[in-house]
Length: 294
Figure 1 (cartoon, rainbow, N blue to C red):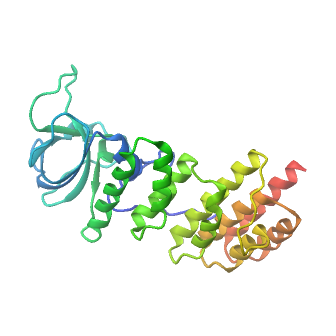
Figure 2: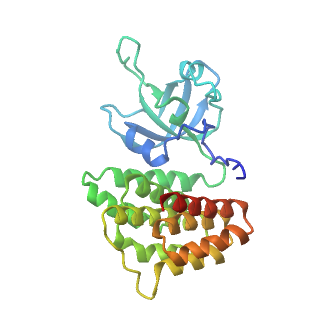
Figure 3: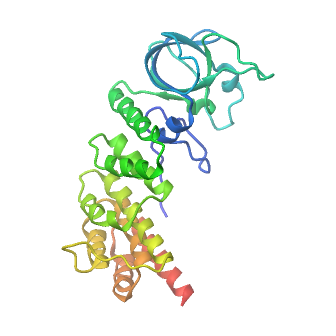
């Protein structure tokens, strides 16, 4: 199998392969203080931050227009694969913070804060597209302020079709992480399979697979959406027609859940003929898995 080369989104520090970084949604939900700010001075003992907007504040005192961050100890104690934590004058950032706490548990009065989760507490905003990331954090906070989990699920589902890709992609990821997909969503997912953006198609297929796996575990059958005679046949068509290798791989994994003689014959052909080594490997792996269980 070909090795994948990781591509990092702006603001995301390198992590070890077995350590999953928190998403913006998770950081927004877990941090007591979320601020969009600009670095006024990053050269001294504490970083000085100019507040642009307080997105979330679950602590008694709101930060002033300018405040400080103690970060150098976190940088010194960083894990071996992490780079140093730095603040450069003029950087625009989204910060996930808590009040600075001494080793004895005392929280000094004043404007001193520290990063949540070390380097993950600082999200560096790119010069272009800054507003899209800030809007995403605001959208996630709007969902997370709702106390009812069912209502949160409905709001996340509504964000799947948002025009901001950082909002839609993260909403897909969060629905998958929480297992929020249900059979009523299947017709919409077939619509997303035709989206122009590859990440939308890939994430929609992952959510489809999760829904099918849950239905199979519960012994339920999911009927094909209106206008589709055979769901497996429609997915087989997607596995052939789509130009994205990543999407075709995800489709093969979804077909593995559906099974059937027609799908077995299709994957046998795909394992020989698909131009992508990754797709051929996934098809062959599925066939070998089925052979072992027979």
